[in-house]
Structures are given as C-alpha cells and as structure tokens.
Image (cartoon, rainbow, N blue to C red; front, side, top):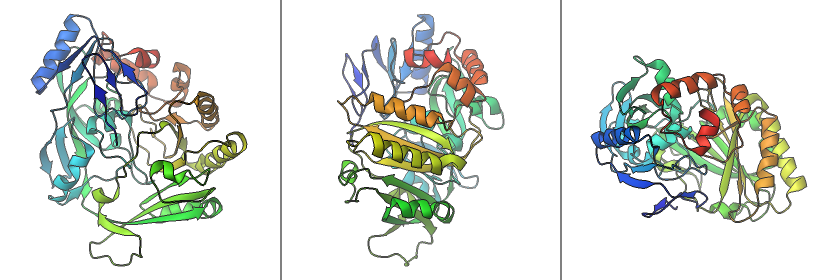
Length: 408
C-alpha cells in the first residue's frame, strides 16, 4: 500500500489524485509546537492544515498557507481497562492500537480493511468498518485535546463539552488541530472469518439473515470475471459477490472449515490494497439499502459494460456526530471506484445522482458532489456545525477552497 509523498515544493496523497504546493512546510514535535504553529498562522492571518497518512481522495489536506507535519506525535499514552478507554497522540496509526490494547484485554470495537490511517484522520472523516451494530471511529471518540483557530488548547469531553464533542467527532479538521484522542474500546475478542463466493441472487435472498446473523457482513460485487484481481482477491466470477462474514468466537473455537481464519480481531480486519483506484462512497438509509444496491448494479450492467472495479457494500450503526453520515440513522454504504487516468467523472456524477435519490450522505474522505443546499437538507445539524466552526476558528485558518465552499 502506498503512502503520502511530500517534497519541499509539493504534497501528494497516497493515490496521487491530490497534489498541491503549500506556502510553507512546518514541523511540530510537541503539542506546544502545534500551539505555536497555529498562533503564528493567526498572527499572519494565513491558513494552516495538517495531514495524516494521506488516505483521503478529496482535497481536505490542501492549504494555501502552512502545511504542518506533526507525525511524530504518535503512541498510546494511557489505557484505562476498567472504563474501556484508551488515550493516544492523534497521529497514532490504527494498526498501533491492536497489540497494545490486547495486552490489557481490550480491542477496538470495529475496523475497516485499511489500518494504516492515523486515528485523528479516521475520526475526522468518519472512517468505518462493517456491522450494523457498530459505529465509525468517530462514534468511539470520548474526548480530545485540540488547538483551535485562535491558538488556544481545549480539553474536549463527552461530559464537560458534549456539543463540542459532537461537532468534533466528524469535523474534517475544521474546529482545530487534534493533538490527543481518547477512544471507547471493548473487551478483547477473537473473530472467525469466512470468505464466500456467492451469486448475487443468493446474497439478495439471504440479505436480512446475513445482516442479523453475523457481527460483520460485507461484500464486493464483481461486474466482470476480472474484477476481483483488481483488489488482490482470489478469482470470483462475474455477477458473484465475495462475501466477508465475521463471527465473534472464543479463543479455543475449532468449528471452522478449511480456508477460514480464527484470530485476534485486529489481525483479521486488515487487507492490503494497491493504490490503483479513485473512490466515491455514499451512505444510504439502511431500510433502502437493498433497493439502492440493486439499482446501482443494474445501472452498471446496463450502462457501463467496461466497468471493472468491484462495488463494495457495508453497514454502519447510527451515531450522534453532527457531520457524520450516520447521524441518527443506520446506513448501508456503497463504494464505487474509477481507474486513475481515465475520464470516470460522468460515471461518478451519474452515481451521485442515483445515490442522491436515496438521500445518500458522503464519506468525507472520498469523492463527492455535495453543495450547501444538499448539506442543509441531508445534515440536520449543518447550520449548528457552521456556527461552532466560526466560534472556534473565526478567521477560517483551517479552511481551504474545498471546505470553504461548504462550511464558511
């Protein structure tokens, strides 16, 4: 898997679809230096942004001012086993939590396929795994330390500052630079993984039971015989689905069959993807999910005979984060991809229109076509979030062109 790249003149994300030249690069090796960098931006009325591992497809890192590198601020600082809480520096990668938590009898409640993102980045964009009973990383945030747009350091918590926490949980870095995060975790658990190649008709027939009977149910639908190879999967025939089923089991579980895996949770979740795609991802109300999947499949078969990338389907629980795509509703998530270097924008726009008819909300790290009018209709706390953003960043130093269009 690739990572971000930067030189003294430019910064590029992991798939190479976002490149820009900041006014200057700056490094921070302590929380105090983050405060000083923000204070300097405030004094000069210039913008400032930071970055994690560059896994977003959208231009959320871009800035015309200072690009701050605080990547050394990583590592777990405390684990509260009794209350199932872990506190870490914000730049700590997801993959660094697994072993450390396991030694204390704990684990992250859920994960996605990729575990190399920083925790701050995953929280800020609403990154998630699959399982209708489990929320995104945003929903697990219990507290944080942030440096706001006035250069002030704030302690954020569910008990003392509940509104600020709800705004911060999915804030795309617009309320302040996170230096530390406190996450709710769960008792350690083992997973039994089953990977099955099922015809799409069988998946649709078993839809409800697959969602209810498994801790994690997700699948990749293959539009062509060669689709599975694009993500490094074993061969799966056209119009079949590579179905991932996870069940929580005891350590001594021996009921698996050949090809299954049983292991610690954090060892089961990750999959390595090549950076050979650009992705759009929308969240559809759960009750409309099956219909939306069928509509997208039909569109691809009828209109895109050359489309090769799999269509990914996942499920996420509702939460209370103001800008979360899961705000007060559980969702089915559809992810579509285009090939870098090709003109896939007509496809993405047509898909956006289709998902829009199902009240689709975007993943903030994936390509999307949101407008202020759509935001106001889809996110009940949209105006309240903008008011909170202006309070904590009155000069708009954390905004860039992409974010200003939606949140100024």
